[in-house]
Image (cartoon, rainbow, N blue to C red; front, side, top):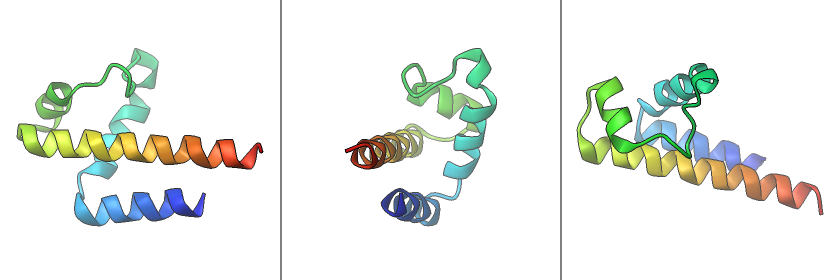
Length: 77
């Protein structure tokens, strides 16, 4: 999990808005807003940002999720 925390901190330094996007995703979990159905345009509209910035944020979130999955899998080995 240390790797996951490092990745998240690095992303927060590179993109301050990522924390708000994470919180938005968590708050909207009940309405089925998850990484599987979130889109660049949803992030753009909600946070009123450009395409490139929204795409980078989504890519960062995908990396974080993959890191968490990898950490969990290693823990269960």
